[in-house]
Length: 330
Image (cartoon, rainbow, N blue to C red):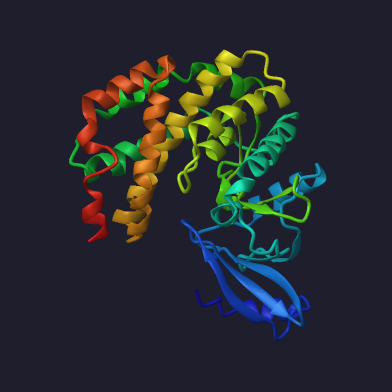
């Protein structure tokens, strides 16, 4: 967490000469974040190395959200070529850590997060966004067979895997083609900030947004890989969303929710295994049992029978939630 060499000059050009640059966070990508402090003022420096990242999408989505009354961090300064953004500092109250300290606030915060999604989905996605359709979803579920399966000693039938998915997501693709919404894609507790207004949450990590199905971010929030979300809370928040968003066909929406949950959780199993095997970040394997618990909940829905059949044939109970974690931790 050493700031890039061009950061002090960038800060000096934008009124922050001599500011302290303190490590704040890194994530599963190449992006890193630093807190900038000068004379009692604070901001956040995003370092997105341009050889790996592009700050343009973050800037475009932030502008779209601000125009519609949501709360991403304001962009105070930008060096697009150098991969630096100076952002509004929302403080330290990320929802995940805050709820560890104050669990009694869970329901109120989740209700606020649900209401944000319902409001966000009242209008179609921006026209210039790529679709979160069959190509993207196929690529993502492929992460499970590419990374997770070999890690547990399975050589899967990839053709049958993809065919199982194609047989279940037709209704989702119809929604994406007909009226997509803005899907932030990592809408969960660690990317939400509690602000002064308890009904208003700060939004982070939305640069990979696509035009997709409204159930996706709902799944991301309620089947959170990094924290336990009880089935009771999940059901209550799904019901709240259905009411607030005025969903007409609740049964179809619920089927789509479970399909997208299985798709997302399969992807996450692959990504976390890749972070361990390729990038040496073994701590991500600690989340796998929780992700499996969500995935098995998804697979119980009748709409996922073909995908459940594939799992039963290829990745049995002894290959789930992972005996191989002990190897990862070693």
